[in-house]
Length: 455
Image (cartoon, rainbow, N blue to C red; front, side, top):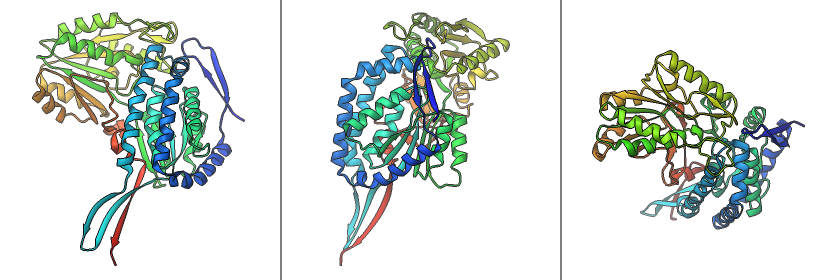
């Protein structure tokens, strides 16, 4: 039987060695989930809602222990782990409040003895291959609405956040989800590949572009619903009329929070030349206040890089930028505890990997621009399209600029923000499909058209 070893990225200490799934055990779980799904879908929606409410209550009751586990296995500062669990609650509240009306049968026509209705039935058996950087957020964005809609779920958390995945499944089972309806799949890439071989009705993945493309190729001939939430190279633009200090404080947090390990972290900043120097001054002052250190320290803001190979990516981007003439103002090196120093470059351009390839670390390039048209052209000069933002006092100008930017989410005077009320989607290499909002509930359903003629 294979095993999965989990280590604390900040210390290297072994946290656990878990039995992992192989192809046979995954196939067994898939058969059991398929068999259990119809009875789960037949249960009244009110019962499924009550189960998710009990799950929410359990998360609240165990919040501190869950936060500590999250910090230990992914290196997220403990204050930010608590923030993730606190931020999960309004997402659950949204699904709980919207499930009944969103999933209800819709009457759309009633005339001359003919009635037309739309029913929203479950897909059936769905698989979720999830991510490690915000494991509570991204897992619950899929698992919770999938279960509410009546699906059975094969859930594979990231191999770097499997302890958190175990807790999520444990709490949902204790809340009333049958064991076969929600099955935990433990393992790395081999387990994920075996999961794709199962007769599933939908695959929901959050992770890298490279892995997402491999999944899409593996499922190409299967006519399986596929959603891919992938990466980003998210830009923000600071116009000349913006408050440079407010913009700098907001964007520094947007670039460095969770050590920059977020698909919607700010990764490129364009600043109109009139406010460039003032913006950079305030940005550096903000970054200088970010404490790097032990993720269990309440004051730590920059914790560990969860995956050690990513340090090589950051080193390569720093070296490439310096070789091509960028000015390094802060950081640029590894620190103890698998951390990376908050790193700030100016005099960057789009020949540099720093401005084109996903960093997924506390590294940022700030580029001076002459005005709006140049900024928009640079913001769109990417294969990604997840988020983009504009800082300005002029709302009309912001809306006009953001309408020209290709991105799934756009921000005026804010960044790195996700709302349960709004769909989360991407353009290009940022993925296909969506989660969150009422659309994110319906993503786990199959519409059925009813034509009813009165005799």
